[in-house]
Amino acid sequence: GGMTTVSAILIPFLACLLYIRGNIENFSSGKIVGNSRTRVFCEENRVKVSNRFTRRVQEQAFSSLKSDVPDIVRRGQPEGSEFSKDAVTIVACVSGGCDSMAMLDILDSIRNRIHVDIDLHVAHFDHNLRGDESDGDREFVLSTCKELYKLSDNRLHVRKWGPNSFPPRTTQGIQEKARLWRGQELERIVESLIDKDKRQVVVALAHHADDSVETILLKLLRGAAISSLKGIDSVVHHNGVCKIRPLLSLSKEELKRYLTEVGLEWREDSSNSKLIYDRNKVRKLLIPLLSELSGSSKALADRFNSLDSQVRLLDDYLENEVPEISEDESTFTHEAHRHPFIERERLYRYLRKAKGDVVAFRSLDNIWERLYSKHNKLVDLGDGMYAQIKNGNVTLVSKIDKSKEKN
Image (cartoon, rainbow, N blue to C red; front, side):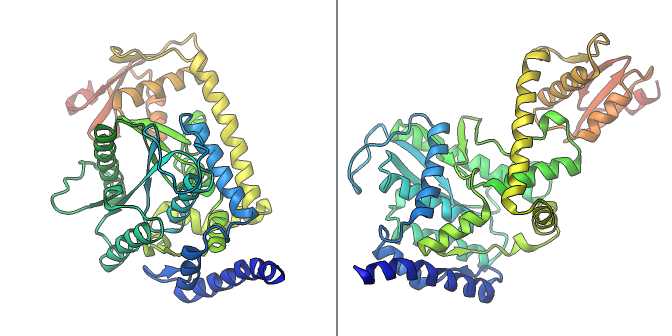
């Protein structure tokens, strides 16, 4: 009994030391973070490594899961029993990085230890942009899913971006193209699973609390309407796909600690450390400073969670106050008797609906400033779309007659 108690204390402690050493020695392109010996231990004694912290993380994620997917229920059956025909299919998007590996293990624990009726699938997207590193990520995810989580081949969905992938056309950079391609492939995966199993299918993404803070900061830096200063939504329905984010209440620090506690490895993406992307600059430079000024990373997350809650209340209020934009409303007409705040919001919603995509806040400002021009004015909205403005009216056009600007 005494040895068992000592082991229960020492093993997580040793795993933490191994993680710290591995983090110092292996923080380079594509290297695995963690220790293989802890992973072997985890495979043989998964139930024993569960402690108060890991159980709290699992229950917290399960609470989010229940909130976003009401049809998910505990089956009340022992571990290892097969899911029912009414099980919800969850497709976990797993890159091999810290966040997605933590999510995968948490979802596996929810179905096997909390006994929730889940048919777990994994989707991995190989963007083929980092050579051997991308290949290593793919092999790592596949081997872990098969060896540790016992997922069969028909529950593993690997998609590789190549010359014949035909990613959606966009004027944005490579990251936006990759995002659109992933969305396109996810729609195909979900559609095939619905057709095959006739079950509810949801996609799980590994965004966490820190990602939500980054999102709000980026909106602030780029310019945004007050009503859009929200963090990441926990559930989104788009093109027939339901996407959920069960880790939004957990921080990056907690996810790393979770993986350390259960003795799991993960991969480090070298591109995440490059300061050529705005999000990486915010993550590596701005957030650490703000966390220090706030007192801790948790305190910073709490501040932004409060802002997020207030913005969502404002958004709910505006839903009732701002007149709905009808489907056949081809032109926005400013109504001077309304408060400017309401009218700006109505203009923003018109532009967003007519364009079918987000509208930069700078564009909204430019349109608002020119709203009562006596001559036709054009504001570039991107993606070949323009706002044509004259005498309080705004119309979206795609083909531009430059001579109109001088009339």
